[in-house]
Image 1 (cartoon, rainbow, N blue to C red):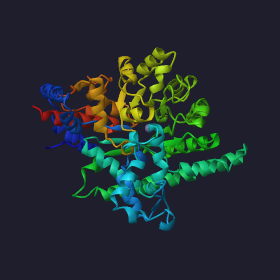
Image 2 (tube, helix red, strand yellow; image 1 turned 30 degrees about the horizontal axis):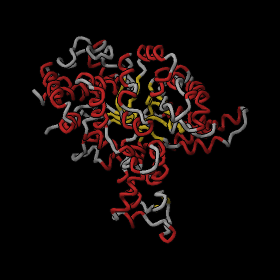
Image 3 (tube, rainbow, N blue to C red; image 1 turned 135 degrees about the vertical axis):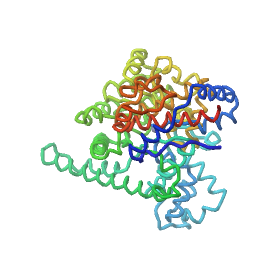
Image 4 (cartoon, rainbow, N blue to C red; image 1 turned 90 degrees about the vertical axis):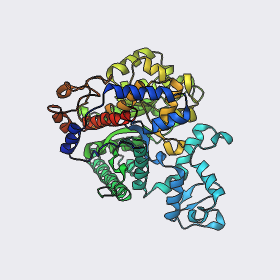
Length: 508
Ligand SMILES: [Zn+2]
């Protein structure tokens, strides 16, 4: 079965435009055929998986690189890198190993099926229902256990995430990563003074850490290119997956450390075009996260205020809370403050809007301003126990708030993006038009720079110089080429439109 794959975003603009000019867009008949096929398979989970696996899903905007890796790879890398592991706590540690004291080399147990099964369960949510542990506790407990296996394997992680995306006909990832954040936290306490000189020294230190974080991105990307043979004749299709980064600030640390991380995130956004935004992560129900939430929102506004408007790209985990997990007094304002105070353009999870006393007013603002919610259905069920009709998925849709589907932590959750599309289709009875909109939203609301290819998010018409071309029918030529040449976002969008054409042509 042939799967169309999106042309490399690394191609020159000319090549992209040339390809577009030669590739006529499909007729609406093909779209109708695809829709009929979707309607035929939507109640058959086996067939629906196959359909959605090949369906072009645009991108994944909420994806933590360390949580994207499956435990099997973490264990393999730990074995290859000489790490040790406690069979009692399952924590991976640095050599020298000490098998006599419960720290054998990972390599020595990597072929022991029973032990590996236990490790996989410990590094993921697999089978967690069978253990006396809450979903949220199991979920967040995995990261410190396997953390050391990921150190030095940043390029391998990029490769895994992009290979998986490409196989699912998905060619854009915004990956959250915390590279350099540990150093930023360590720096925070070293500059206690308020005088000009101390401020300058602090600034220089943050700048130095930013350089180190950028070097990690450089070497990770180099490693990914090697693993995928990019630029060679035998290049893997995954080389075409465009990856951008969000600097993720861990919100559970003392205030000076959270501010230092935020400064690093902003500096990276200023200095490295690959870092397109920032996000705040770690359990939102943790004591420090709850205590400092409003302060953190205010601090984000302060630290990002000097960024140019188009670069002030803040996405926040906000409202990843529910009644019972926290007291009612902690509910109903996190989404609001993320938007109103911190200036978030994207909201991750957004569950606690259910409890906002001025909910409809906020929903209207989100719809009007195009503030998108990154929906993570499996994650929400595991961490919050929120699913089905108890999830605000339909509430957001009814109010015209744009949504995208994302994985959150596909490795830890043992899922993939196709799974999340399937879950959404089955739970909320989505139409073929609905899933196309979700896929298009993943690019329209990405933090990639440049003008949007469409004039609105109903995706019926192209914008500006492209307006004479018809969506789904006409090739993008003439004046439209200029928009594509000047806007990376528009190029990615036009490539997604092409991939819809290729996908739908299979059902003619
Ligand atoms: Zn997340």
